Image (cartoon, rainbow, N blue to C red; front, side, top):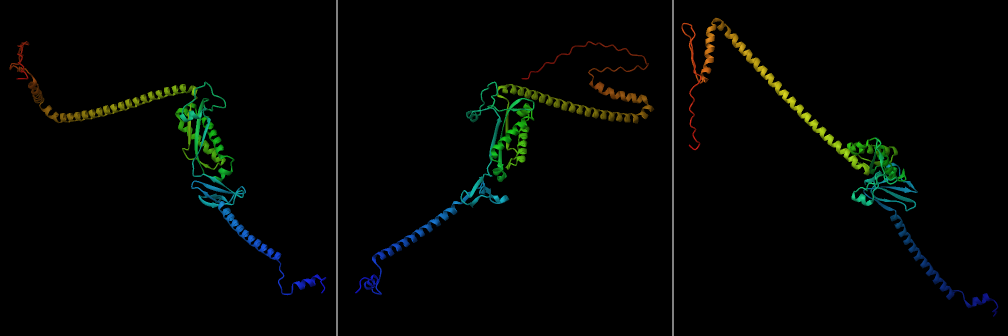
Amino acid sequence: MDNSNPERKDELTHPAGAPTSTPAQGAEDASAQALSEALRSSFNVVKVLMGVLLVAFVLSGVFTVKSNQVAIKLRFGRPVGVGPGQLLKPGLHWKFPYPIDDVVYVPVGESHTVTSTAGWYAQTPEEVAAGTKPQPLGMLRAGVDGYTLAGDGDIIHARATLTYRIGDPIGYVFNFANATNLLQHVLDNALFYASARFSADDALYRNKLAFQEAVQARVQQLVEKLKLGVKIESGEVRTDTEPPIDVAEAFNNVIKAQQQGDIKVQEAETYARGATNKAVGDATVILRGGLTSSNNLVAMVAAEADRFGKLLPDYEANPELFQQRFLAEKMGPILTNAQYKIFLPDRPDGKPRELRLQLSKEPEVPKKETSKSE
């Protein structure tokens, strides 16, 4: 038996049909199977994680637009959509995560306020909260106290508050780096513009409403020219004007004097109107009375003329009878009212009669007055 051939030896040791695996090979197979199961489990975990990440990715892009807002979705810095489609209405929306997409919210349903104090004196926060004025310093501090020049060259203080709403969100957000600051400058410009077109007296006292309307008109003009994308309604610009603190008392004294003068003028005009109306009324009464009297007189004269015209033929026929009749008519009331009556008839011979009168008469005996008790 030749043992020098290894192959032959192996055939003798492992006959055909007998298993050829060794313990080492069995261990390798078990390890491979465990590794395969581990890989399979890891792959399942990865799939679950990928599903969770996918869901998180989808949910991370969900955002809400509130009822008083609109939103503009930006993709790589540019608005998504065209025209009105660029504005997202209130509700749920979706976007890709940043930096692919970004969202800008614009509060179109809210009122915004801008205040201009470029022409107002400096106040501390405490003075503003308390509504008090600073103490007079005898001068305006350059760079601290604001003021405007009126059309007559006087210095006045003026401030304004603008309330607006956003009408064009795209233009408001993207056409300007800071639209609020630009509105601030527009309001400052409007204050100086209006001040230069009003006298100090008108801006401070006599025509404050017209001054406010001029400021609003200027603001509206500049907003439309610059296309700021905001809406300004009537009455949404409010102004306040005051004289310089150091001369405020002098201004007030002048205004008081003017007001008192206006009161006196109004009183005089009222008296003049009353006197004129009374004179016109009196004149009307007198004219109407004169017209009535003249009408009555004319009517009476016409009636008398008519009566005399009717009596004239009878008078011409017997004048003496008329004389006696009229004499009797007149003597009746005369004798009735006379206390003493003396009748002196004519003598038949036509000679005059002599009448002697004793003018002094006996005094009348006073009647005894009866007392009230009796």
